[in-house]
Image (tube, rainbow, N blue to C red):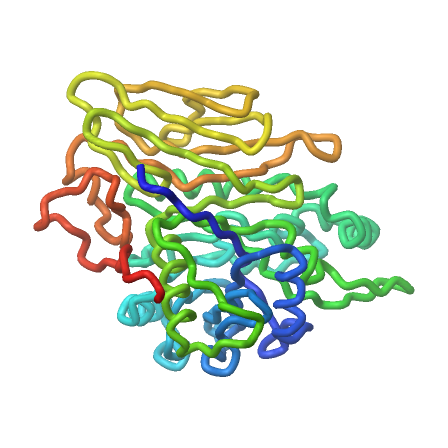
Length: 405
């Protein structure tokens, strides 16, 4: 398998351009402190790509938008639009039209916080409602902000959450994992993590506190990518604008890896997740997470998972645990097709917590099975089993491009 480059960053960030409390410089400063390679800022119903996107202080600062119908009395149906170059919200108020417009721009449509839990203290529900839509590339499997909502059952507990958020973080909502497995049974759907950080200051009685500051979120739920192409980088500490060739190249590297599912969600606050790997091979070829393999007519597909440190590694097949070990590595052989993904759980702060959630490897009976949904762009990398040309997905993102010079 060809060498892979790993990068990680924070997706779903809000600033003063919408309902966030901080400016871009604060976001970039937090990202730099956390050692991130990139951030993806997605303010509500506004696109400030030309003003803000580029390399800033060594951090690839990408700009998308989170769209929703602000006139709809029923909240929900928020869509992350990653890589768009034209404003989406002005085109329509219907979610399917947003998705179509994102696809027309060769960008990524990600359903934001698709399932949320409500309490009496926080009754508003911003879940995704129109599940009949088609054409979106992925879902926000782990929305960091949303994971605290079920715990906010009283003002006292909300204060505790604001001071000790790590005590209450357990992983994606269980019902969100179930929904993802349900979607995966129909077609490939990429999962990303998002912090949904606003860094707003709240006051309860005499206590005034910033809930989930930018620097905390930059150290928490991140999305790690693997790419066969390296980032060009800023080539210095100066700022590069959104049209600079290095920015254009590196933006596409990030987007292609996300589109292909060559990524995992890492709860880096519980320990760095760099170095995680998930791969599989059989006599038809080899692939990494996000890729696909034809199931062998005879013999086994061999799966290998490498964890950055000893932890509980679960290999899931079609939503069920196929194999589980407490170790640095997991090896597993299977002759069965299916959707295989990995969860890694780590003992931290007194309990087992979700640490790593990978995108799947798809083991299929035939090329036609592989493309049942046919809507995930970039789903096949060079090391994957490739179907005949006439069965390629209708739209693709370029996985290969010239290296930066």
